[in-house]
Image 1 (cartoon, one colour):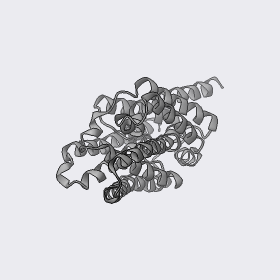
Image 2: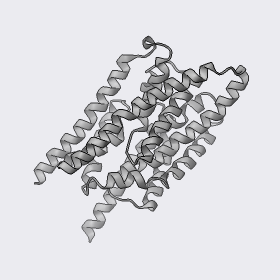
Image 3: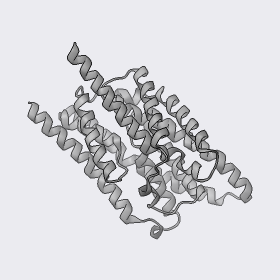
Image 4: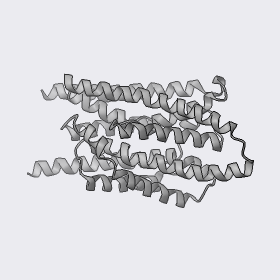
Length: 298
């Protein structure tokens, strides 16, 4: 009984730690563009972010059940994820926590049934940024063709930025959060507490904006809004399907999409290649460590 309780406590500690990092690193995905445009105060944006994350956590069951079905080796998977996330953070690269957790689970539990599930999840990882690229490209071109006086357009964008910030924050609660906690629980109470830790990370360290994403292409307030909204919509689609996807990857897809509307040369491909490289390497590291540990245990 003591061993079981200790294991659960460690899972909670590491899970909440990962959510704290997620909040600190990903809050800019939700409210960064709205803050840059001075749509409202940073304090108000954090309140909006927190409310939407907590509301999103009440819709986390679907993704949580998908992740929970992969494995019972939650503690080991979370430890592997913490190590790889720490390495990625040290390298200052925006890497998907989703891919790291899922790959560590697959490595720990390599079987035909899990590989079949992994194939579906891998497909969603590949498709979601592409959908975001297409959405951003189409939406931005449509937006540019709308004939609205500049002052009225700015006023509209201000409100739309707040809406898109809410969408992305909601997705963090409904998709990213259960990808972490779903490794060992489907409890709504734990999900809600996890949402609080995610918000805490945003409040304490969320003002440290990641420069890597901003280096992909030059963004105006309107193009940043379209990129953010497209990423949020792409994640919402896959959340409805119960598939764990990355908000960061989707927003990078959105940024690429609006960048392409201005020409291929406006995209800094070296930065994008660096990001994609770590999107591939980090999950492989997690999967390999998980596989080695599973073989050592057997």
